[in-house]
Image (cartoon, rainbow, N blue to C red; front, side, top):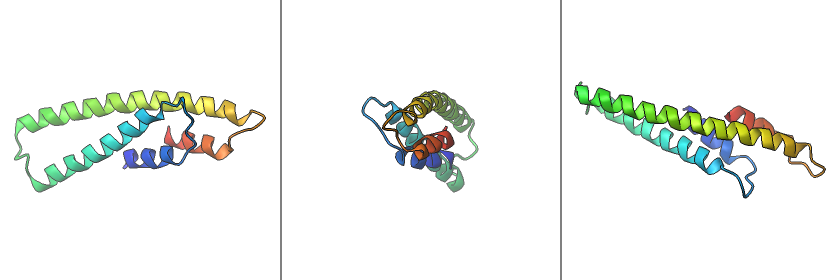
Length: 104
């Protein structure tokens, strides 16, 4: 759910050319889709309580944590930069800064 929320919030902001928010979008979409597929696999009972699935589950969540932490650092950095852009003579609207704060 949070991956989908971040995806929507980042997609609704102003993206400039030298912006690393592509990684944030990739992480949020990837984790959203993979978690949904993971939910379907477990809801259908395809795992059959095998211990191998527990290992795969652990590694998937480890990858998701690393991805989300790296994406949150990038998004927080871009939010700080956007705050500085809102103070310029031709500022970006303040709502983009608020949306990025919500996404972080």
